Image 1: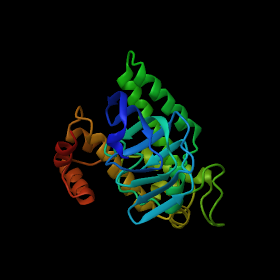
Image 2 (image 1 turned 180 degrees about the vertical axis):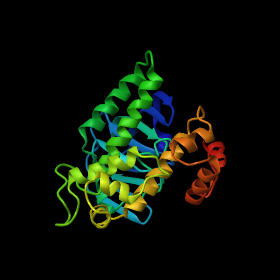
Image 3 (image 1 turned 90 degrees about the vertical axis):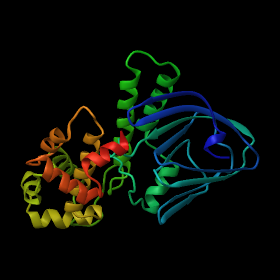
Image 4 (image 1 turned 120 degrees about the vertical axis):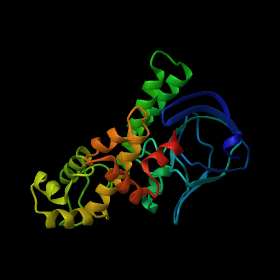
Length: 287
């Protein structure tokens, strides 16, 4: 069984998101494989068949689970494989998120580690479950402003997923080592980076805003997240640029100034260096 075996009873689309209410009958025994160029969330509205084993493969990383949850997340360009008992009807909400549109939160090609993939097979985030149920209701009974609402709900899900995969564990965010950033410090750093113009931000600016030295910040951020602050800021800047370019109402000149570049040429050089294509080439490819 694969994606085309689902019978779609209702579907809704908006910018960067597609929602399906689908159903199928799991054969007994069952084997199921699925992959997508978009991020995919499956929320089961009916019971999960007994004895289902799951495996999620993303790049060089993989994770196995003796059972899958009612809510499963399949990152873009990864593959979900399930096998086990079946023989029953299943109804699901399937939400597809475009990595290009949702790049600010969940960039495609992210290097998911095995512990991340384990969380994907059994997503336990009540806020995501509630939002998926809301998407289900809006898809089955569309009303005034449904497109805007669905797009907004997709953004909520993307943010919650990003929080799920923050370097520190969910909950109290205990430090990985004595000299790592606390939950509050990590959030302060990320919020500051997220609020600044991409072209103008410096490590010293972040350090001053977070009341620590540049050397301490650099060391603690790497220890806490596994990536350098420069890498995080660069990834965020590139994803923000992609997200702004997805909006055709903004000219490339407007995008470059919004990101803090002195002129479109400087923005084009930086964007091509980061992505391999110019802003105009990227826009033609995704719009």
